[in-house]
Image 1 (tube, rainbow, N blue to C red):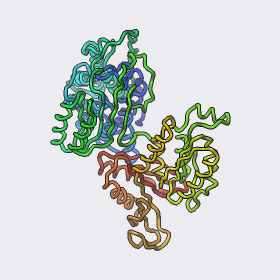
Image 2: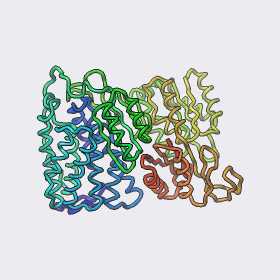
Image 3: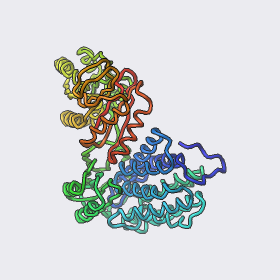
Image 4: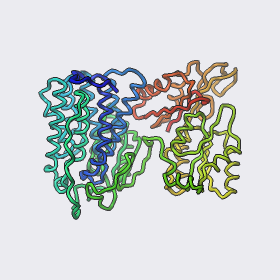
Length: 576
């Protein structure tokens, strides 16, 4: 994050560090206000998730900005583009999708200059682009607040004045939204998406002045009353969201088709990559329309709850990682996060009393870093060292140490499959239900652990984890110890070997170049998430270089990096 401003010091231009700070502060602000924004979410669907969706969208933008700073010293243009691109990839819900387009609109102007006049033009472009992305714009929403912010600072001027005018204009417009939509007026609240945008603009003002704007205390919510139907509650049953690779002409046709299928249609993005959001009754038709237009990624289908959600302020707070409140979400793609806890506080209490916990995961992993990562996710781990795979007795002891009635065993190595099967049979004889998922690499184990849900039925959990592992192609980089014949030709001692699915596919001299070649071969067959696992002795900068390579060449692909620590291969790659 950029240095703190000195007293009475104000920014004249937004440099790269200032954009980074703004992004981080916006993420923090939406985190603080998430539950309150969720509580006033009554339009377009009263599903209580606008704050969460904005928060997750801002989190994706924040991660993207931090990634470019980890890779290099970006300039302002690269930073604002990373912020907008990250938001596009991670946009959630109606308001999150619109926020991503607002950031994209700003980025197109701020890439050319970041003084006050450019900021004023950026906000105007943001408001225009967001309205254009929405099939049927409605006043009293985040669009109204964005337009008011742009209008309030249209005259331009010094950066601080423009930022303050925009914030104050947005805050004033937000207050007026409660009288612009019947749903808001009945509930006695302001627009949830608009409030989120005011938080983002407040973070911008704090960045350029060094002082947080005065925030009025939230207005008390009206007392609970017999619930009326709000706009959207009698609407479509499903929310469908996906990323789409397609050209402009195909997207124009897609807009027309989806508009006829449903409502709340928002299509944002450009330059070949789009984020599509729509509410429909026929989710399959919405997905098929995307397939006909181009290549959809990360398809997320959410069924809205059939019963009414609690009145504002009366609901139970959800975790920040939830999809929608009172709804069922099905994801056909990758999760944004890594770990779901494998146990609960009740499990820990049972273990402390010497009782068996309901379910546990046992994973074999190379390197202390991965062992710690899996342990944080609740797994019992077994370390493996180069040339020293764990013996059957070690796996049996690990399953016993998990002290669970049901255990999922992840060997994460093709050569360990028979050993793991024998260990599983021994423990089954002791009354423990053990499922062996034949993971062949650590990255497959990570993918399986990421979708593990201990509260799900055991068989369903095993099926989901097996599917996640099977959908992850894997590769490893190693250094040849001596001259040898391989499936890719003859290698010499010291050559870098790129093994894909266990077979040598690339022979190179340089670790980074070989890794890029391996990545390109794997991604030529498609992919949505690249996982990189680096060891302590891996050359510094390798992961950052590969992340940048993916960002430049594969628009819809995310990259996540983990550190394996010592005694691990130089690089493990997973592609989901």
